[in-house]
Image: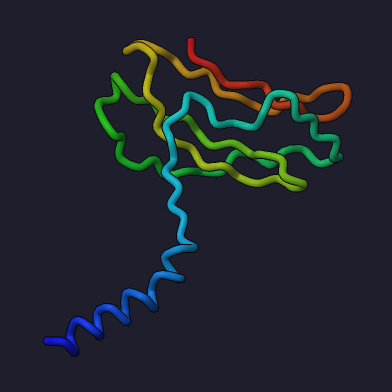
Length: 115
């Protein structure tokens, strides 16, 4: 019995340093997790075309949830940020997708919004 308690205590003590470094991030639902609107990309290359995404099962009825497609984000290079289910502000709300628009200084993010 004492050996079993000692073994469990040693295993727990050995695993504490490993657990101390673990951080769990929970993705919070947001209306639009797109790049900030004031980002201007001055690279000569256009944003790549949107990627094809597979939509997971919605978290609830489609009257309450809408799929917001992913988009490209600039982080010194183009990075794809996947789509997500977003709660509708009201049952008939329509999502107008954000997009990269051409601006005199480069490309600028135009925020998506509910209509």
